[in-house]
Length: 379
Ligand code: P1T
Image (cartoon, helix red, strand yellow):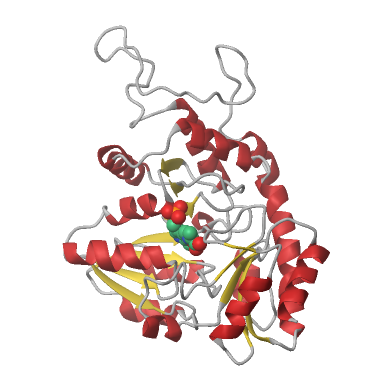
């Protein structure tokens, strides 16, 4: 099945008791058993819920994987992956990544004896140099949040294969409509479902997709034991969002291109970070491993002056100032004070998250209206 057909149909069967075409919201905590252990595959909703099962199947299909696991938030899904490790294990991670991921790695898991190394993965040689016989996980985010760096997933997979090292890819910025990391050799794909998968800024959720049966079993054990699972109503909303994922992503990409090209030629704009621009350092890799460049981008205002950035954020009208991304409406953010405030300033500056950096999540509105809004704010 091709992607658009999977987006509409994957995981979803008409309800056997009524024929309802939409998966019902199974708003139940438990399931009646005829005798102890004699049940229909469902015992308790932390462990299994039919609405969640449908969503997990749909997400697995969209990532070309065999097993999907949903979590209460994107962070809970990252938490589950790191809980596969034990004290003394090492993780090699991208140095530009969502601030919350950096925070859980350094503030929650480092005190438990897991060691994290943050490297610039635009050059896979840096990953090769950081891997030791203690490395058990390589954590890739691509495109990275917020400077849209691109990591060559297939090149990193060559470094981890056959070495008892899991390769996990946070695919939140691309969504499975634009990139399928497992096809490039990843063992685990992670999503903040909150973003493009949900697509309507009304749900917070996370997901993992894997192929390996034993790995899926270990993660399902963590999912059930730690209990950060989403409720059925949220699963229903995401099932509904997925049906238009391919259509939304087409418009995010088209609007993203219009906005990036507009910013790139604007005399008041400094740097523009968008993987679709030919001047992006890893544009060729993005072209190879992605089917489109998406609607996420960041830029600086010439002179790199905090006041100018704040003026811009106060003046824009269609782009709303808010954390998060990937919804139908355009959002803008100031990573240094919002999404990436938990990363120390020197660390941030090194990866380009300067005080004037502005991140845009370009929505699916009319492109001309978006450009007019940006033009007015830059003026
Ligand atoms: O917010 P949550 O669903 O828990 O997902 C965390 C997360 C993980 N990975 C990436 C790449 C993310 O962007 C996020 C969440 N990011 C934001 C809220 C943000 O505005 O960048």
